[in-house]
Length: 392
Ligand code: PLP
Image (tube, rainbow, N blue to C red; front, top):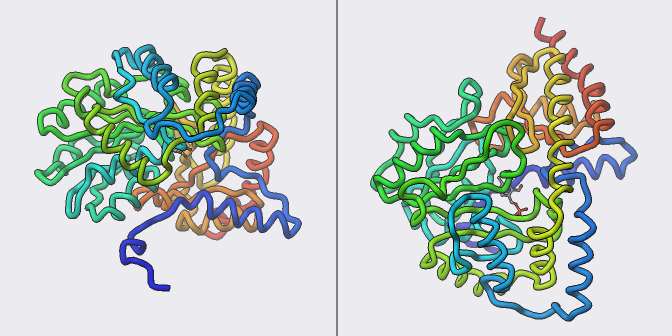
């Protein structure tokens, strides 16, 4: 079958591919520690599951409005006001199956053929993939270890052009765990506002912040009318498999994004949306407990990685990933990741899977038990010792 030429421009997320290979090794009898996939190992809190069961029993099994149930949009608007300090109305909210469609729909709605879109590199691979897919020109901003993996704002300014139709920022960030501070975001806001460029701010890891305060672009001067906030339930409430996310955007854009929902998923599952209300309005201690546990794991993993030969790892301030520098091995990241999977039974991702500026790094998710993180560190040591021997 001949597929359309645009399919050749669509990328992928290698986490799912590595997961499939790791599972194949497990089926062949090998033991694998999974540090490749970005999802909390915690279960969804019981009161959220209970709300979904009740919603099913009450008959929430039908189509709903494409932009989301009014009661969930209300709850999200209130939540946005509380967490971003900006009053938001339900008309500004579109609910989607997971947060990923907000990325897809925003790029589809704002980036035309030949338009430029700025995105972080290394970054979530779907940004670049979808920019290319819609015929846009992806313009990377390198995130450098030396600057805490923040946006290089001078580079950002130089790369803006009359054809720039979108800037994407992500903080706390996947894959580096880097966080943009207030001063950095204010400069992004000033540049975007002065040139009337919309900004997609991916805040899915907002709650996974281990030091400092969370800052959103939404409340910054001149940003209300040109900001699209992407957020959702997958990470904060350990609900990855439920598929529930949302975007907050100016009402005129929300209408276009809703039209894209009408043309694709129709709507998000109704009982899942009702469970989302329980997540936002219910007990938040499970979130705090998970975040505290993740902070302990981050420290264990960073400290352990820094004892391995050829590896150096900065302590990221957010998300649940570490991004160790493995240039000390003298080998490409993909080869290091490959040997760790095949010889040590530790599944990690090559930094290059997140863009060209990720070469020289690995991404490890610490959404795994302390015992498994210790096991992974133990298993990785002989592989890195072997790299060191070959180098000397
Ligand atoms: N944005 C970033 C930076 C992510 O890492 C992810 C998931 O890995 C998403 C968005 C998508 O989240 P969801 O599972 O809700 O679609």
